Length: 264
Length: 247
Image 1: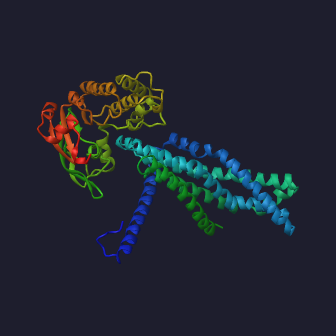
Image 2: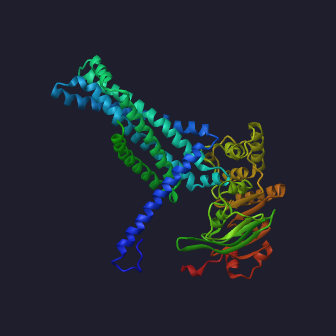
Image 3: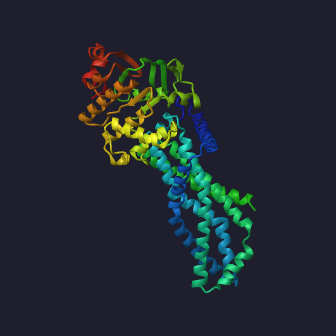
């Protein structure tokens, strides 16, 4: 907030300075939180039960939405890419076009966005409610580190489940494209899968894999951080949940661009 | 003994604790009374190491805890039990798992020993047979009793109660107070309780301290507090309206 004792000419600078300090402070807290989470991950004993529970929470419970969005993304791709390629007489390349789009780009990004919407928001809300109902304080005063019980298992589960969800999204999407391209539009199955084997190689799969791994870390980091640092009451939880989903989604797209630039 | 010296805490420009001094004798029940928003819960959070003061010291058996971190602070906290205002039970766990949690995670006891201790702790608070239920499936009074059982199960030396009876009907308030008194007689822990329950707390407290505007304005045995000449104390214990609030 601008200091009213300052002259009007200096107030904009005061406001910009205040905002900058606040932004740097928030970034510092965000980074410190991640370092604390890494320390909690590296410190034994490993919380196997909490980790399995988080895999179920983030991964298994997101399966239906991944199957649905994967199938329809593949079907839309199959239809639109076919209609484009047929103009150039290149419809034989439908298989690799669908597969490369999904494996390199759409699979990791859309799967991450879907899991963020379903599990990331729930993660923030759950931890936020634990914060406002003093359950996190209860852990702390029992001399138990809440980072180890709540954050570390979530980040590890994100590392495991995001690539798995992406793989499922890719496979279902490729079959969605097959359904439209082969079953509805009459392309031969051999052409669809044969050209795919020719054009898709391991480095494309690894690009999608590394993207999904990094999205898993980013989403669980943002969502647990927002839950941990929730404001007061139900409104605070609602705001934190919205911020977590928006920030995660923006970071997925920004990070996707950087990963796409770096990876082969 | 818990000794608090010159504790100060502000949030932004709002001072909440101003040179607060208090001594809590080992094995006693000390009740902090005071109006809502007077800083009682903030004070309690300093004692359990959830907040750090701007100035002043908190000493537990001569050890200053205000600057402790990590394992040193955890060492002090292992001697504590805390009953939070809303119970702070883990809502994803059954009542029995809630009580078992500190035994399993903090003391790393064997499973059969944990089961015995949990059953005994729930029995002590009159909740035999509810272990399988989840916190959302039981009443507010039962949740408070489960929270007391969880605080008690590790046999701590010091238990902090943050308004353990808020929101309960008068019968439950008395039930919880007598439960605390009974458990205190059996286990002889040091109890520090924050409460609004006037006059019920005078029956269970060894010492009552009145916190007003961030300071302890009166401290003494219940009889002395009830006979206090201090206007603020009298107004609070008689529940007289505050005309300074502009109503």
